[in-house]
Length: 73
Image 1 (cartoon, helix red, strand yellow):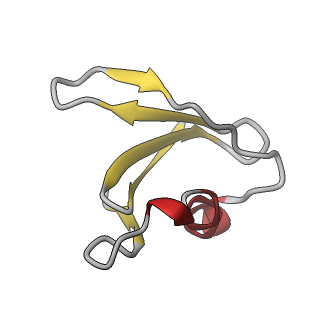
Image 2 (cartoon, rainbow, N blue to C red):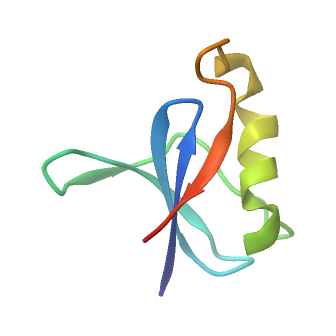
Image 3 (spheres, rainbow, N blue to C red):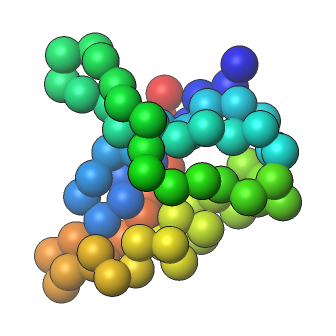
């Protein structure tokens, strides 16, 4: 199963699965994770994920934290 990680305006988000079956999680510092409180629609592809997360969480942006970045695995 594929896992993508993003820094979403300062918050770490992990997305696991594939298009149509994505599941989002909030990873903890101790290796744990909890389900995220949002869903990813089936039509969102891997290449569109950062833009989708930016649109979804745009209200969390601040002048210092104003980007959504895909993180290396």
